[in-house]
Length: 360
Image 1 (cartoon, rainbow, N blue to C red):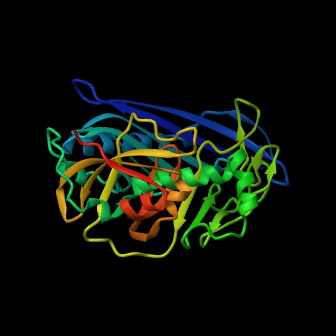
Image 2 (cartoon, rainbow, N blue to C red):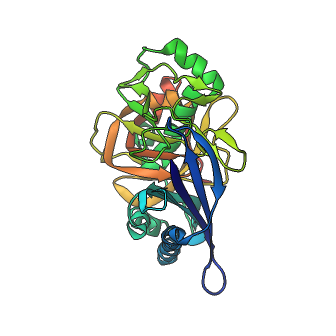
Image 3 (tube, one colour):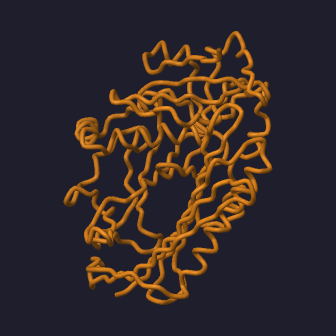
């Protein structure tokens, strides 16, 4: 069996004139045996690569246009379009990713998403409009006197960092041992965390021919046994690497968080974006997120808030998920709604977090 895999990758950067756009294409013809095992590949060229390249260019052009219309400056944007074809036929699956690094008055932030939609719709789904409410120059507002008592509302771009950190803590070498010991125990408040296969929808198998199924890491708050490994790669997650001539783990982890719904708290401290360029993950297992935040009932008063703790411990303080789901693309793909957490005073009292305001 033969299939064609196309990856179009591009980058756009601002210049004094029009933005500079570059797109490259990689087209592979992959051979599988009757069991679904990939036995080899070769690079090819052909007319089937045109659509992926054009879509990548459209993604980047749309990102540059939206950044230019917002009160912000585009530092760069990267995009990829992946296509899977049955032989030389039309694509049977397509997936696109876009990630823009934007300079805002409050510091650089990332806006990224992924999916199978049209380029313009993917870019439009990003929270560009909120950038316009940031003051320029950035003069931090004073948080309300009772800010430590108010619940925290983590928008998807911030919540995705906790989700990715929690998944890593359960699937890393040390984390697998802990997950095995804790299997069956409820450690989270009815949240379900699922790791999704990287194989295209409908294929059913990874590149070793093993079933590519979703893996539930946390089921209704209970830790699940870690997935078995095959030569160091989780079963059903092997990806053929043409240049290495062998199998590797997926280049990107795909995750989904679900759980009980919660109302959007009208008085919440809303953490909208993480400021980039700062170390997030630390060797002691904690994350430190410096976020651009505001009070939900005072949407024009922005300040910087730092949230620090272990991802699983922070998720223990979840009160539910609110708002529509969003696919957030950065160093992983995470689909999540906004996450409602307890207030700073309650989380610090439980020993699960340190929350500070860092305005001068």
